[in-house]
View 1 (spheres, one colour):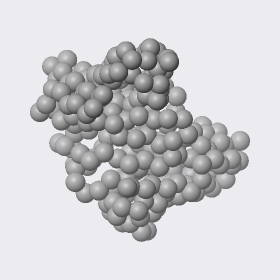
View 2 (cartoon, rainbow over the protein chains, first blue to last red):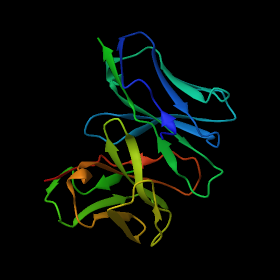
View 3 (tube, rainbow over the protein chains, first blue to last red):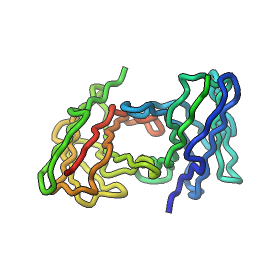
View 4 (cartoon, chains in turn cyan, yellow):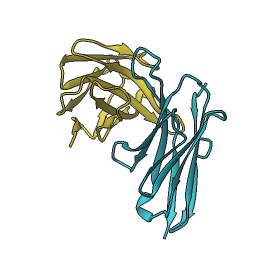
Length: 114
Length: 113
């Protein structure tokens, strides 16, 4: 059973508009969340993170929102650019475990159309 | 800038072969990881290591083993390759502080024929 879910395998957005990528998790022990971006033939690169003590973290065009009661987080990209076209992975971890195991979601493929 | 280098970008092997995937990082990181990425499944953890000669099983260790003789190098071994091990393999590392993001290599696309 997947502990981190990204229910939209793909998303298409017009350049300049907002992209919203969603992620749900089931394990209430998770207290740290990350988003990674992956281009074809490259490894994932870290994008932005959020701790469970916050409900929002912003970095330039990227904002992550966390709703702990709903066990839901979302990544907003504003404005979207063609270079944002990639697969986005949501990931979660818990400081309560004895080691730093990160659970990844299945990914959402974002296409930004010029 | 952190560099995680995987020895091969593409690899083709035959069933039953013993396969070695090598990963080297240059930032003196304690923690190193091996994942495989399959469509619709995301990244699944095979093994990880938090120190030299230390290893822990991840979620899908069956059919794999690892070796960490030096801090900078973490090897993934397919003892007897099978076709269901055809996948993209990703190595990652990070330092001792918790909740640091992992730095990934560019991956090895392994095909088992």
